[in-house]
Length: 151
Image (cartoon, rainbow, N blue to C red; front, side):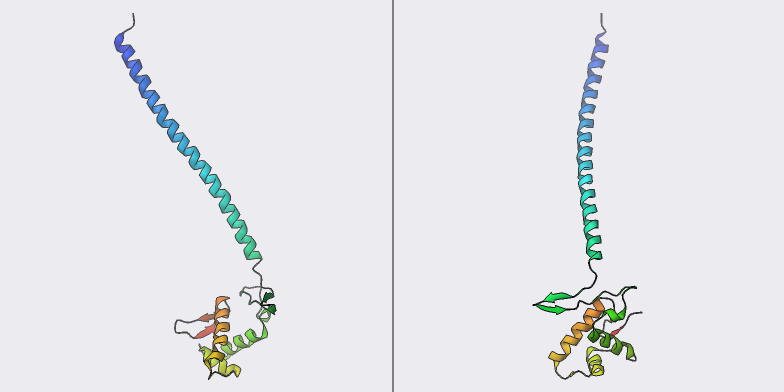
């Protein structure tokens, strides 16, 4: 004859184990889903890194077309890009800023280059070129709006 207490304990233990198995199955399903999501995220990250590397490699300055006219893009300043890679106008601007006794305003650069600085419409394109040189790392713009060479 089987002990009823032992049968009751076996039944209770089986119920505990069944419940534990169900919890573990749910956790395993969640972990597998998260692992799948991580695999997808890893593939996306690899693709993005590859695209960024391609974009950086293709970011080399080259002549472009705007409105059917050939324009020279201003290259970013790097150790392997010489100042001579800049168009002559930009080289003259750099030389004027370098030749100044200190930081200069766009108007002063215009005066050094012999431009008509009395008309704002003629000064703004120069300011745009100065800002472009700042954006590309050739010059530095101080908080007060003056321009100076990079260190």
